[in-house]
Structure formats: C-alpha cells, structure tokens
Image (cartoon, rainbow, N blue to C red; front, side, top):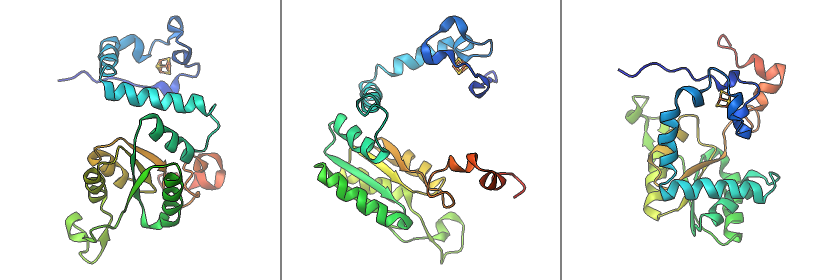
Amino acid sequence: MKKEISLSCVKCRAKPCVKGRLEALPSFCPMRHLEGLLKHVEELYRDSEAAKLAGAATRVALKGDYAWPRVREFAELAKELGAKKVGLAFCAGLSDEAEKIASLLEEWGFKVYSVCCKCGSLSGFFAKLDPSVILCNPIAQAELLNRAGTELNAIIGLCMGHDALFAKYSKAPAVTLIAKDRVTGHSPAVALYTYYHRRLLQPST
Ligand code: SF4
C-alpha cells in the first residue's frame, strides 16, 4: 500500500521554488520529501509531445509579455504548436462566444471545427436521469473532434464535470478557454473577492 503523502503548497507563503532557491525550501516541501518522484517527472518531459507543449505554453506567455487576453493566447499557442486544425467544444449557452472565437481563429488562418454540448441529443437515461432530459455530451464532442483530427482543442464554457470528461476523451490537448461560471460572467475567481459572492461558497448555502 502506498504511503499517505501530504501536499500543502498553499501554506507556503514564500514559495522559494519560484526562484529555484533550493536552500530555502520549507520542511514540508515535496521537493524535500518526494525527490524521486520529481526526478521521474523530469523524465516525462523527455517525451517530445510534453516538452513541445510545455515549451510552447511558456513561449506564448513570454511573447505576450503576460499581457494578452486568453483568446489571443489560444491562437498563439496553436501557432506555436504548428497546428492547422483547432477544435471548439462549446456549451450551447455560449454559442455567441463560440461563434466569435471561431471567426477570429479563422482570421488567424486555422481550420476550425466546433461541436455543441448537446450534439447527439443524448437521453438522460444514459446518466440514470429522467429520459426526457437532453444531456450534454462531452464524449461526443471529444470523439467528433478526434475524428476531425484537431491538433488543439478549446473548452468553451462546458459545465463543471463535463469539462473533465471532454479532457479525458480528447486526443488533442484540451485547454480551457472559457471556464463556465453562471454567476460571475465566467470569471470563477471573482467569487473569492467579494463578500456577496463568498456567502454563496459556504457549505450551508
Ligand atoms: S517551496 Fe515547496 S512547499 Fe513551497 S510552494 Fe514551492 S514546492 Fe510548495
């Protein structure tokens, strides 16, 4: 049986790892206790796909000087990866946003494939719900984009949990372009900043 581990980076205010200051790691730092595992992770980056994506993501952030909107970053990431075909897995409720993103990406020269969350009109029966309910179908979104051969996929407002299923079945790397939040205009962190939103985060509400 694997030994239980404790991971508490949130409790580390100084975060010396950010500057590579190994001498200042706190006693509970995983870099002290899980060195072997982290060495194994370094090996994973030797896989060319992982290194390609990691490098492209960092180059985009640096190129934009941390000042580009996320939609621009998506286009830049696709360009860095040399992708020609990009996929949009979007929520029906964000159809307008998806349409705008699709036209923009076409202007950038990409071939855009988009699939709505209700594609397949899947009956609630398959999730042990009322059969008359039409389910979101993130697996269909992923499989259709897989079939199209997209090289980078964007999640546009898929529901909490459906996004996980999409990412699991998507063959191309799946990034979140818009994180659905019905209360904050799709800006989940906003709920952490105001008293009124924070009240809605308590387990009892
Ligand atoms: S220094 Fe260690 S404990 Fe602190 S944030 Fe970095 S990895 Fe986590």
